[in-house]
Image 1 (spheres, rainbow, N blue to C red):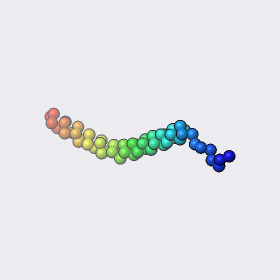
Image 2 (cartoon, one colour):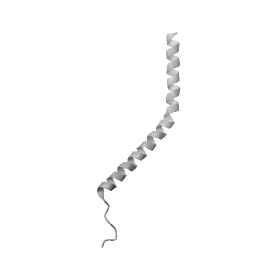
Image 3 (tube, rainbow, N blue to C red):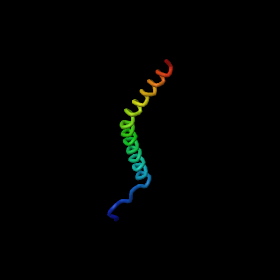
Image 4 (spheres, rainbow, N blue to C red):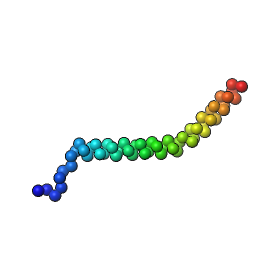
Length: 55
């Protein structure tokens, strides 16, 4: 009897896919959190510029 039962390749691939998906979601959330304030500031300046141009 072998010491270790061989891993099921389908389950192993599914676990890897889930791990990569979770890592991607965490990275996306971190990037969004870091970039959202900058985007909001830029949007504010653009809206102000358009308002001034229309007056």
